Length: 296
Image 1 (cartoon, rainbow, N blue to C red):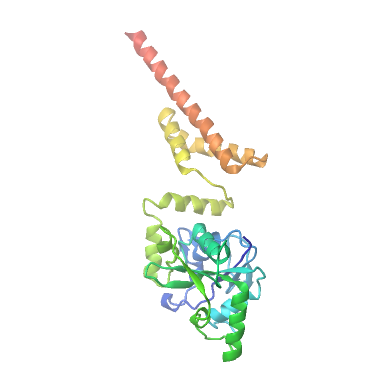
Image 2 (image 1 turned 30 degrees about the vertical axis):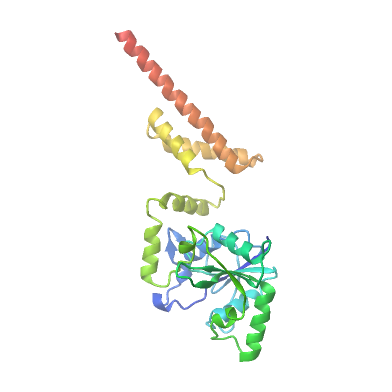
């Protein structure tokens, strides 16, 4: 499904004392980079705001004059897009994920979709216009009408636009409560930072952060690698665990460079190394049994 993405990153962040909110880190990744990671397959990604470092290339623009509010910013971003479907996101969504984005796009333009787009509905039953997918022609039509009616878009609230659009509400079971969570205050930021370090989240968050830092995007079967590390640690020696997983990654990279599927390459290298660790342990156990029998 072809779509463009517009990320609004030019707000004043008054409740955070005017800091550069999109650049604040959560799990060692900026809020902006976390949002960009949720829409990697956008044909064009436009960030409306001041330029800042990002993990992947984006197109930059700004409303004129700056500080015109979300509707003026959205209009500026829309001028940089051409796809019939536009994903619109705020830059302060630490838990937005790819399945949620896909659900929005499917609801806006998938088989049987009707209306002007789809917006994420939060746990309190409110639709979020800055976590939404829109039909671009509907956005352009209503923005043009508002500009004509008011003479300017500067300072107009986003609800002036969304009140005229027919948006399908989308609730994504399991992820929606987190996907709509935004960081407006220091308390919100602290809560986000604490949540990613919870036991059930920390490994996935860490793996994603490492992949982004290294510039790789490969599906990783965490359980398989952890099982391999356990077998190497128990069957050989504790330091064998990190060294073995490093070698598995190296072998998988070589296989992928030769045309193999990266995820399958990791799985196959892990299987071979795990089998080796089990054979190593079995040999050591058999040897110990033989020595014990000989001494008897």
